[in-house]
Each structure stands twice: as structure tokens, then as C-alpha cells.
Image (tube, rainbow, N blue to C red; front, side):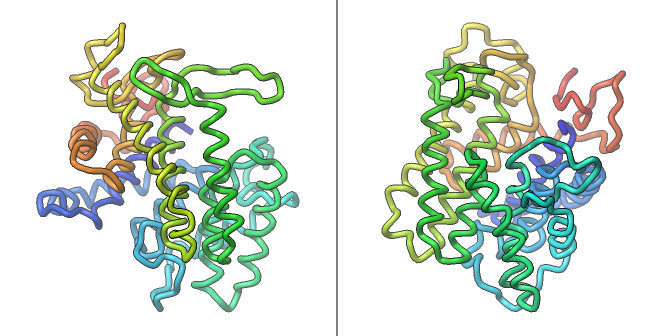
Amino acid sequence: MHLTRLAVSVWSLLCLGAYAVQSLDASLYQSKLRVADNIRSVMLASIRTSWEQGTAAASILEFDDPEYSVFGSCPFVYNEKFPFRLCNWLIALAVRQSPDGRLSQEIGDALDGAALDGASAGSAVLLGSFTDTSRRDYWLNAANAQLNYVADGVYMGFPFIAYFGAVTNNATLLQIAYDQCRLYRDALILDGPTGKLWGHIYSDDTKAWIDKGIWGTGNAWAALGMLRVAVTIQKTEHSSKMASQIANLTSWTKEILDGEFASLLGMNLSWPPSWLTSYNLVPNYIIGGPSFPDAASSAALASVAYRKFDKNYTDVAAKIRDAVMGNITNLDPFPYWNSTGLLSTEDWIGA
């Protein structure tokens, strides 16, 4: 799981090459294409569970067919270019759907217990409804079954719900996706030492924290999810009526970047370890858990900064990019428990 999380995060960072606005960044991207291919191989070799399948599909779409990514200019309309590589994933994601509607579950023992991880594959499956129109109903039915499960099980799947709303022109689903982000933030937001950030796990049943620690990867996932919901709404005909929702999502995403990037600089921390400024990576936990320089959350946060925010954020993202890419020396997909490498299960640089 840690191996895949890091591979997907680094892959997401590399996916931004097509959007590089400066010639220097474009040149750097071109120089890293071989590394990108190796990281893709590691990612594909390590994925097993439903969330890994879904996030890998999204990453491949951004790299191979960025015009169909939610970050593209017109992502919900077929442009006569068929996304061949992704279609291999679509079939695998749909045929492994469990009877309760969860996508990509019938793999291994199909007992991962995750109620909503299959939703990560929902957007990719929905893409088939307008790029592979001969099987449109098949893709829509598969996605609809997953949506029903998310609506009943309820707390996650924001980008998938928003994507479903965009493809079907359903403003209610777009609002639900926004509301899910808002409610999650209301439940998890904390005043951390570096700013407002999200705690890890809160039980609404017991009204108590299970893990009140500020986990870097959890905040990175939240930032990525809210950004995707925001840009998805922005690409629909409902964007003008939902301008305040888009603004809130963008502000909440920025809030996470502010808090996490401040931790990278050691700001307002009573325990700043010596590695914070030397590694240019955010800590695994800012408070409440093991603190080590974490490449996965750092790369994911950097990708968010590059997608949406100004130079104040992309300058920090560039430091993270260089730290991560400059230390990729071992792309063996197999974990070794007696040593720690960048892509080992320990998931950090500098052991």
C-alpha cells in the first residue's frame, strides 16, 4: 500500500509536465520521461486493492490523455481521440465489480472491507460512457451501482460524485459532492501548530477521535479531492451558479497547502527536526504520529500546488519536486524489509 501510494503521488507530480508553463519546467519534464516510465511500471506492478486500481487509472488518464482529465479544457466531451490504454482499465474495473456495487473489488479475496474505495474508479468508468458509446449503458450501469453504494454508505467519493454530476448534467450531484467536502472538513479540521489542517480519523458514532494526529497523506488526499471537485464543477454549465462553492473548495485546498508547506519549513513547530529543511519534504505526521520526511504526501501536495496556485506555492513545490525526483535511485517494485529505499514500504527518504 505504501509503495503504491508513493508511486501514484510521484506519478501525479510527473503528470504536470504537459502543463508546464515555463520552458525550464518543460525541459525538466522531458528529461524525466524515462523515470516516468519506470515509475509507471512500479505502480502497475504493485497495485492490488480497489483504491490502488482507481487512483492508478486516474493517473494514467492524466498522463496519456490529459484532455479527458478534469483538468483538461473540455473533459466531458468526446474529441474523436479514443483513450486506448485507459480502456483496458475500464474493463478490468467494471468486470471486478462486487454484487453490492463496489468497483474493482473482485480481486484477491474481495474482502478488503473498504466501503468507498471502489469510488476512486468511478470517474474512469464513467469516461467510457461518452468515449465508448457502443457500450454506453454498460459503463453507466456500472457507475450507477457504485454511486448508489456511495450514497448509502456515505462520507467519501467526492470527486466521483462530482464527475457523475458533470457527465449527466446533474446539479444536485455537484452540490452533494461539495457538501461532502464541507461536512468532512467541518468534522476533521483542527487548529494545528502550522495552521488549520485535518485530523486523521473521527468517529461520528462515538463523537470521539480515533486518530487526532495531523497526517500528511490524509491532508494531501483531502486537498487533491477538493481540487478535483472544484475544477469539475468549474467545467460544467452550473459553474456560475456555484461560484461560491468553487471558491470555498479552492480556499480549503489552499488552507491545507498553507499548513503543510509551513511544516516543511519548520514554522511554529516546537520540535523542528534537523531534517525538515535539509530534505524539503513534509513530515508524515505534524503532530500525533511518527514524524519522518514523507515523499508520498509531499509529492501529492506539490502536484496540487502546480495545478492551481501561484508562485508562492509552486516555488515550494519545486523544492519538493527536486527532492523527490533527485532521490529516485531504486525502482525495484519488491519490498525489502531489511533496508529502506525511496520506493520501499517505509515510504520515506533518508533512512
